[in-house]
Length: 504
Ligand SMILES: [Zn+2]
Image (tube, rainbow, N blue to C red):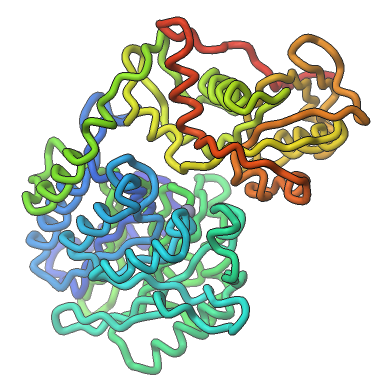
């Protein structure tokens, strides 16, 4: 049995008690955090089997719709486009084409939808045959919902009228480059969502489904916790279902009587939610299934879209940049891949120190020849490297933040940090030296290179935001590619731990 809260277990129990003779009124096929994963991939956990890809996902949704013989609707919890070369090099165009062919009715507006600016998102919304929804997103100056989105939309599926309501995580401004969302406000709390659901209910839909790009993490002992749980608990106008997203986690629970589903990420899993008439009682059955690309039939129309997009970028993505002596995996908070990227930033920017936030490191690398396309998936965001001058005191404050806040974890180059993890946040850095062993002095000046996302205060690095900065004009990926190509081959990753916990 997957990870479930006690309440979700009860829902499943009902489902398992009466599997036959029931009729499915509506089947919801739900994904989230697709992140441009148009092509199937072997995952670290998949035992060498290919998982996901738009063609297999589409084939699976078709199969589940046929098997049901009922009314179905395809929905997504947001963060549709950002994350693979085939998607990003077309600024999401290829993914929207695939989603159109896959028959999605609506998606939430995810934080990464803004990564190429609002104008590009508005263009993708025009291209989309599905609605991109958010109830808590508004223009800061006028208070109005921007023209390219809407709080909710009525969708007709078979004989059913389904009101679909969107929500964007309140973390959006700190999880994309701030300039991308300048002028927009993302209201926290449930008030706007509640109001949008009430407005939708007044149109007497058969179902109300919320697409919330807001997540949770669940475990057996503590149940589920996170933004979408708080949101669901605070709603007075309860929807029939929440499709959640953003945390890339498995969520299968019920909060405040509202079923919530999240199917991991990157098209590797599909949420299947059945609203069932079971002897006159309506029950909801949720399951999340892995998308095995070697088992599902491939949707040929979708496969053609993906193949054409991949062929257009193949000369670039297939170029071998370097050879790795060992695999580079993201395990724990500190790993050689992060050190290598930080070294690349410091070399490109010519600074004393460099820092890369772990949230910006998005894929592992296997040993052997590594292509530009694989490196792109490690650093898909096209952040510019920014050079800042900081005092030793601010450098120390920056590193305190990196070791204090869970979502601010980072790798460094040019310094060695000793950390007492047991000390209160803000007092954990107990040793701070440059690589040559000289201590970092509070009053001395140092140069530091960081991605522009971090320089703008992303992931809570507010101490850097006010500083005068110089954009190097170098894209983070280009720095990494150039650095790897220059190193002696095969590349031996820097194994030393530079942020050492357990120090006293
Ligand atoms: Zn997200």
